[in-house]
Length: 259
Image 1 (spheres, one colour):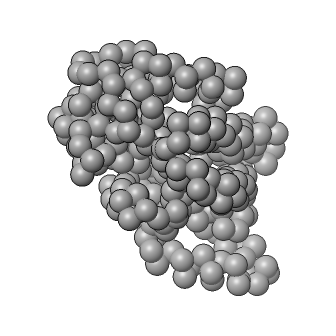
Image 2: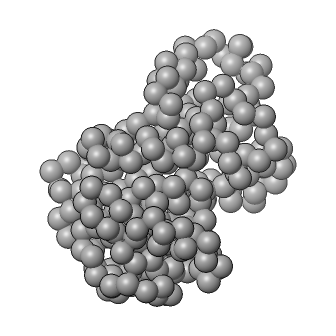
Image 3: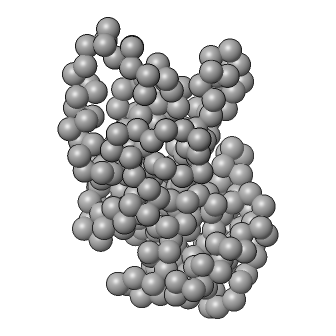
């Protein structure tokens, strides 16, 4: 765990981004670094934490009380519990945990390569479930905390063009919906963010879909929803109508859609 300066305990305002290189995760952290509740200590958890110098510098400039980095491999499920314990031991209770890791994968490859299909599902669903469970249990014990998870409009109804990724997001969406209910009255809450196509590194080279957004726009909506105490948010809001249309589209039409 790397210390980049500043105090080590800011209980209640600590922000941990699991997936510290994520564009959306970073944008959310930048907005939370110095917000209405005061300056936050931020922990960026990612592979190769020593390579996060640009992200650390940006957070410090944004007003974070301190920024730390720690090694994190989302696919190593056995490491999730010990990592969360280590972060809390070093910096105090986690106020907000942002789960910003995930992979899009290659749908064409996944249709012929079972290992690749399983890898997409493992990172985008199994690893998310594991870490959310660890964090939810830990926060319940502390009596407070906020979880932020990212689903997708792709999870509303699996499409021919990306059904492996879409199925993982559908599973995550269902899990988070149930977890939200399970956390009721515990002092812990979960915000589920459902963006559409996000123009960024993950989708580089792909033509934007209708109702696309940017990492900035997703982060703005996420932080606004956090401050409003919401449990779910679509980005943009007009995706609610599109999601309804997705569910109502006849299957013979649905299977012919390219996007």
